[in-house]
Every structure is written in C-alpha cells, then in structure tokens.
Length: 358
Length: 255
Image (cartoon, rainbow over all chains, first blue to last red):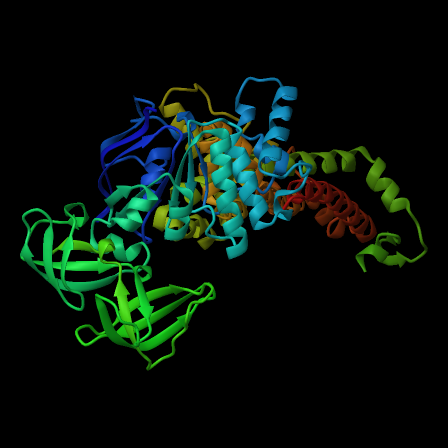
C-alpha cells in the first residue's frame, strides 16, 4: 500500500491566527483516517487544504505523488461530504447525486445506472425523484455520500458528517460508513471532535491540538499508549498521580503516591527524562474490592461520588495521599455496587500505568 | 370609480352614464393606442431586461466580494435617490442632447464627426433614462437572493467538478432566480406606466401609454376613454406579471 495523501510541513494562517501550524502526515491508500481534536484545533482547515478550498501559507499537499499546488478543487481527485451536507435545494435526489457525473462525458443511460447503484449503496433506492427539501438529516447525509462516492474519488473527505445527527442515527451511520469504506475501498479522511467516533471507525487517528498533530497512531495505541497527558485526557479519561524516579536504568522505577514503588516498562514512558514523572492510569484498569479482601497491593480508600451510566458505573474515590481517583466499573454479573461514603480497597493493574516525564 | 368611468361616455361636460364598451373597442382597435401599448411594453420590457442585466453583476459583486463593506456598497447605491427623480431624468437631456455631454465628448475624441441624434427624443432615450433610474431597485432583490445562497453549496459544486462558469449557471443563477424575477416585476410594473421620463426625453417617438392617458384625462377631456386605457393597461400588466410569477414559481417549486 502506497502513501496516497502526503501532507508536508503545511502551515496555514488566517491573518494573525495560525490554524494549521506545521503538519506533516502520510495517509495510506485504503485507510479510514481520522483527524481528531477539539474545535478550533485546525482539523477542518487541514481537510479543506487537502480538498483545495484553502491554499497553504507554506508547505505542500501531495495526492498520489502529485503536488496539489495551484490545483483547483474541481480538478483534484478528492470529493467532500460537507458538515451541513450542502445538498442543492433546487435539485432532486437523483439530480443531486448525478451532479458531478454530468461534468463527465459518459452517456446518460450509463450515468443513470450509476446513480441507481449509488443510491442503492447508501440505502436510498427509489427516492430518485424526491425533492431535496423533503429529506431528513440522515437521508441528506446519504445523498451527500452517494454524490461524492459516485465520482470514485481517490480520497473521500468527510467534515464532521455525523455531528448533526441524533445519537442512535449517528451510531448507525458510524458502522454504515465503516462498512461502506471497506466495500468501496476508497481512502476516507474523517474530521471529528468525537473521540468515540474516531476510535470506533478509523484505522488510524491523528490527534490535533492548536494546529499541530500531537499523536498519530492506531485507535488502540492512542488509547493505551497516549504520548502526552493532553492526548491521554482528550481520549477517554485518565487519572494522574505524581511520582519520583528512583532508577531508570533498564526499566523505570518510580516511587509513586498510592501505589508505592512500581516498575514501568520503557515502552510506556513518554517525554524527556527527568527526575519526577506523572503516572497515568485509565479508570477501568482499577478495580474496587471489598474492605474485607486480603491480598497484595491493595490500597484503601473511600467512595466520594458515584455516577451510574447503565452498563458502567464511575466511582470517585479518595485515598489518603490523593484526593480523587476515577474508577470505571462494568456492571456485569456478580459485580458488587458501592455507595457514597463506603470504605473500600483498590486493586490497580500496574502493568497498564503510563509515565509522562515532566 | 375608474372602472365604472371606463364604461361611460363623456360629451364635453356631461357624463353619459349608459353602459357602453365603446371606450374599450376604441382602446384596442385605434392604431394609435395599439402603437402606444406595444411601445410601452417594448420600452418597459427592454428596460427590465437591461436593468436586471446591469443590476445582476453589481449585486453579485457586492454579495461575493463586498466583504465587510457590503453595507457601504448598498449605501452608495442609494445615493442617486438623494436627488429628485425628475431632476435625474432631466439630466439625461443634458447628457444625451444634441450639444450634450455625450456628444461633445465623442466629438472631442473624434470618434464621431457630427452629434448623434438617435439617443434623444425617442424610445432609446427613454430606455436609457429608465434603466439608469430603476437599476438600484433591481440590485436589492437580487442581492438578497444571492446573500441567501449557502456558500457551502458553491464549494460543493466546485468539489463535484464545476469550474467557475458552470458553477454560476448550475448553482448561483438558478438559486438567485427568485431575486431576478422579483427585480423584473419591480421594474416592469412601474415603468409601463411611467410618463415623466417619456415626456422629458422621449420626444414624440418615445411617448408611452401613460402620456396618452394623461392627455385624455386633461386636454382631450375624455375621462372615460382615459379610464378605459388605464384599465386596459392594468390588465395587460397584470397578465404579464402573472407570467413572471409563474416563471418564479417554477424556480421556487423546490424550496
């Protein structure tokens, strides 16, 4: 698989604001790639730079080893699904889907066949003559997808396409998009601020903050091995604990709050080496055990807050050395539940601790 | 009142109130009235056409390139209204006249050897003066309809392979059509009945139906005929306006 989209040291500023501040990315062919970040981090600008709606202040975008410098959006091998779908209100479904095809010199019968195929692909068969204004949000979404996919672009760009849909429909569209991407084999680049969406759908995710890529990894690595506290707290939740380095020869030996002396594998240490570190642990890597349990490495604490989410319950626990520790517990069969004020013990999965040098 | 009047007859000072269609028969059969009706329609349709044609680029410019100075541009467009309509029309005499500004300028440039005469005291003069006078009224509705176009639709059309020209004809023009039709109506309806402009710059070849109505009401002292002419022109204008509106409906259908 070759590198289909290459972003090389791209900067983009609007007046004083540097929206994209030196981004380099390689996106492989056939990947479902996500640009994830909080609003204003430059992810949409980056997408628009790839589409050609913005010109980089410096740096270049290559698609299929061709520089896109000076190439207008209509001549790029990319198509876009816009955030508000941008369905032409004066055209019906069929005319919308066929919009780009009409610029090509294929005969009408063939074009109409392609339109029907595209509508079938997105599950809108038979709605050919429906007026664009009579469509629901989800249907508009599908029309926008069909309209872009029918042109068989090398890259499909999606600008927060699911943000306007309600939760149920959004989850359904997430899995449909994923299946669609596998079926057509086109490279998708998705912009989203929803970390859950990025993790479930993508092959690779680039997390962006302030116009820069903070980390680029597979969804699993991003969650399990975030390379900075910022990424760690943006993707899911993480509790941070201070620690002092005792020894860093082979693996990192740390004297930490709560858990005492622990050893952390070199692969789980990020940042420049220094004397003190911050240890991070995900809420679901800590288990609550009853006060009466007897085993090694138990830490005692007291429940100060309980949030019930249905399939999981989040507890906030205070220990003698740390104010709050977040713990997420699956409400599966046999799982005990605890209430506020209860004295409990904690057992942490120490192998899952990550160290960030400060 | 006018409608009733149009079915009566006037003989010097006495108004004969017996019902008659004679006024209408006269209005539609007399060649002079036919000529005036058709000339009025020709002038005002031509004016409508040129006004919209001139107003569209201006509205387009303000809407797409006005940036944060849109309000200023719209304000500048209203400046001609600070002087009276009469005065503005009268000034066209100065510009288009035999020794007028335009002729003198062209003579000075030696582009013409003797003054042009086809530009004043005929239909052309009326068309020029009216087009200028009504252009701002056309700019506003077109501007509003252009402003309403979602800019992401323009990006979508570029993204789907349209160049700037195709984009204009496939997205911008169809979506701004309601504004164009609105502008056309705003121009067409009042210009058919205009009588100051033809009187000032139209000479005898540029007179329109409204001038005749005025003459019939005053000098000719035939109010019923004037009323019949008014009602007739009202009907004609209404009919053409409905055609405009139907065209508009066709474009509005899908909104």
